[in-house]
Length: 141
Image (cartoon, rainbow, N blue to C red):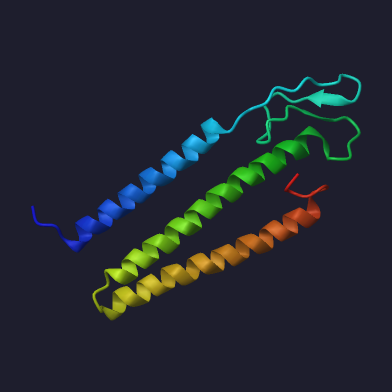
């Protein structure tokens, strides 16, 4: 079977997806989860630990409570996913541009993909800034 540009594209995309999956899965597994004891007078025990490994939050309400803690965790997970997708789209656009072989339609499609990824990145930064303003204590707790 001869090696064509399409088979190379499929190989590169497949390897990129496998690498992203391995890195994402390994980082989720290898992040150490510390065990903390909660003070029942001042802290609430969460049913699932947060990304930081904490499973206790303050009862004072200054941080927004358990719902806000889980919301921040979900936003952090989604932020990671958005970052991976944007990087993947820029890589795919770059490979598409490199393998266009001077075809104006393919070059336009590749530039459009890269432009859309960069616009999505700026939109994400804007959304992140707005959420950081709205959520008490910010997203990066």
